Image 1 (cartoon, rainbow, N blue to C red):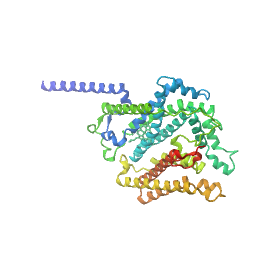
Image 2 (tube, rainbow, N blue to C red):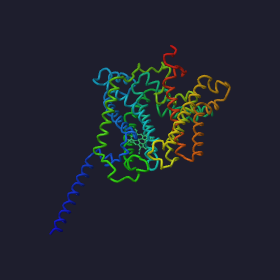
Image 3 (spheres, rainbow, N blue to C red):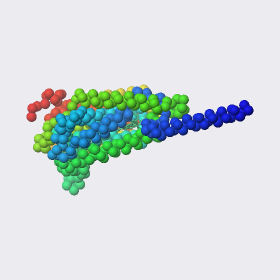
Image 4 (cartoon, protein in one colour):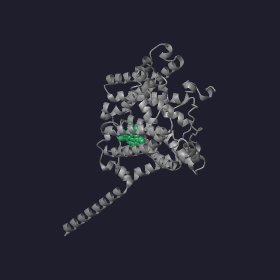
Length: 466
Ligand code: HEM
């Protein structure tokens, strides 16, 4: 009798457990949150100083862009005759229009900054290693799409800032012409001209450019980002959650994991509120720029590309081909290839791969900073080889300039490190750090220290009145 009772009790307990499991599964399938998150999360992934929440912040900034963008689209008209006025109407007539436009603008700038910070955190924590290489590659594509999305939006207000920034951008796209011009083949083979035409639909920025940029900005790029973001998140789940050091790798047991619902849900909600409040606060405090109506016959001087391309514009001032094509392409090849060149998977999830790596990173950052400053000092004070040897062939100028010399030194240094330390991860740390520091310094110079005719000035207060 006692045995029978125990059997019935255990069957009942089994049924109850089954019911609870079904209820749990039902909850998961009905819950959107648990569709994009795994049900459990490793405590290591929740450490604020591991991710800084940067990926989530990016996702929320993108959502703000989409919502505010949809509202702006109701009032905006993509025609060279009416675009500027429609933006003015949004700012001055549409109720709340100014705030929505400001939020859209500042969230987009935030995305550019945060996408680089996220790249930096993923790189230095070795989170591209092992099975996460594909997600790194998807990330690099997302980085490119984020920049393009921002750039395509730049033209839409059709003011002087927009017009001349995109004119500069389209000239950078034609950088290959320096090379084909030197070979004397541009009239028959003109890839630079092709890229420029692909981008703006002609030799100058006009209605075809505005139509293209509008289509890219409101349809093609946001949809591509959305799809790739979905794949990016799905990959994180497939890869077993966020990266963590090898010592936690086998730690998949339920006792050491937290349930995503509600721990992660509350954390993300907190981040969402923080992002919203920050963007709204900035939007209330600062207006997005809107200069006079675009005037093709009155160039801005200096005409500057959007700030995140000013590092490239600085390099283009030494050589169009090297700065506008060679170095950016090399940089992208480097970024894409990192997880395939460096397969030292045991470094996964550890900031800077430990103390040795951190020391190397700090030394590389210091070295790159001084090297770039020295090159800039020489270029600004004494000019380049074009000034030193006025009759010299343009071929030399194209291959020997601060852009190419800096890149060559960094490459040699990384190869030297790889051989000396017998480690591809250490070489990657050196090359990534050096190139990133150089990018930041060149960009800062372009933003703050270049004035009319791309001359060097300590501040815009010193600019001559033209
Ligand atoms: C629109 C752009 C992007 C969005 C919205 C995004 C979003 C996210 C999110 C939410 C996470 C998880 C949380 C976190 O790490 O903060 C993540 C992780 C990751 N992201 Fe991104 N990301 C973007 C761009 C990038 C870029 C530019 C890269 C690098 C090239 C990248 C590579 C990765 C990798 C490898 C992981 C897994 C990290 C790990 O396992 O620790 N992502 N991303």
